[in-house]
Image (tube, rainbow, N blue to C red; front, side, top):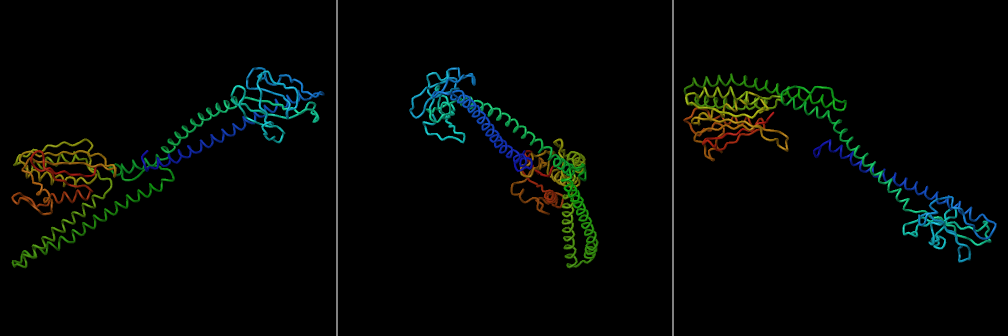
Length: 460
């Protein structure tokens, strides 16, 4: 998942909700369980206190009786954490009774510490027990025979809080493990959901790549209802683009035919006129024809460069072109060698690639002594545009050009050496064609001694 992608946004949103909701749910469940265990623990203490109060205070005398230890076996185990204690309050004389588990220990009285009673008349208090661990004390004040005239006694029952905390800790650990597994499962399900949900977009991406590579002309296949309108609009856009280019080609062709005949008539008539005015008209008419031809050619280039789906294999174009160029320059004995990376394909018209490479090879053969070298490779993908380029270099072993001469060459009609055949338009045409495909032409010194022309073009 890349930054600023739909997949990352969807995943981040779902992950944020999961990481927020699960801890909140866990805290709520933990709080409810803790409260439930606390109520159960308190209910157990109340039950024991009620039984001890009934057994010890339901007497006809004025002193409590020893209750039987039939309620909790741990009352019999010394310092088990479960204790009971009966003693008089307010400094009154009376009998003090304790559970065997308390032995010689003394439990503090919530009554003595001024703790308030709840709605049932009992008092609660958490304090360190005889062993130092926290115990929960429940206290009730009553008199033997439940007679207010008799001495009042504090009846206390205590239970260990470490048992309560241990129970809660075990539940918290299990709950954390369970929620962690649920969270991981939800995140995995979210990743699957995002990937599965965005698969149609990947199909559209592959479909557009196939259109750009010339394999198909339309986006085909059944897509989800939400994306189907996008498919329809893209197909309509592709058809509209093709229609616009076809109309542009037609208009350019019509314009070319409409201008050629009148200009030819003007030039012929002016040549028949031997005066200086006739010569001037013929010269300017010829210049007009060259300029019109140049800009009509550029219009055709622009129209061809805008076509979607035109792909030209470089090697299939280069091989016959080299054979033709070698035959043209057979009298010089020029040998052209080439190396082309597998899979190198030009995103454009074959005739445009032939024209660019033909001009570069022809220029190299004119200036080279015996060897011309052509190499084509695929450049790494640009991070910003996510596009690849083909790098095609043509080198010769001729005299080469200085840095100053390399900056001048390529201007339309400019020739550095009038002794060589040509019009000086070759590199200008290559420049214009490369620019129409958002490419460029660079000139450098060759390691073989001559000129090195490097052409950067879009790769399919």
